[in-house]
Image (cartoon, rainbow, N blue to C red; front, side, top):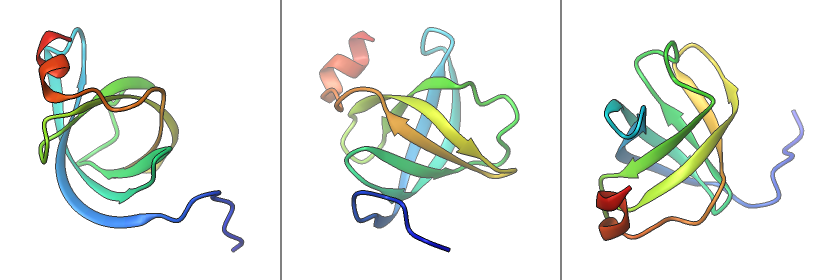
Length: 93
């Protein structure tokens, strides 16, 4: 299979949360791969994961708006819609 990514992926094992519904609904996930443009997330199930959501990074408290590019039963590939906002902005969102 040919690699189509423009940027090299950083393999990670970072805790995060998928947030939607005015940030009132969250799903725990693990960030498995990361670039400046997107990420691969592992979730218990992709059922219920919306097409657009916020990703809350547990490591630094930052937040990023994401759009789903692809999904399998337990993984979601996302593109970042905007740059990560600092933790203080995440609390106001």
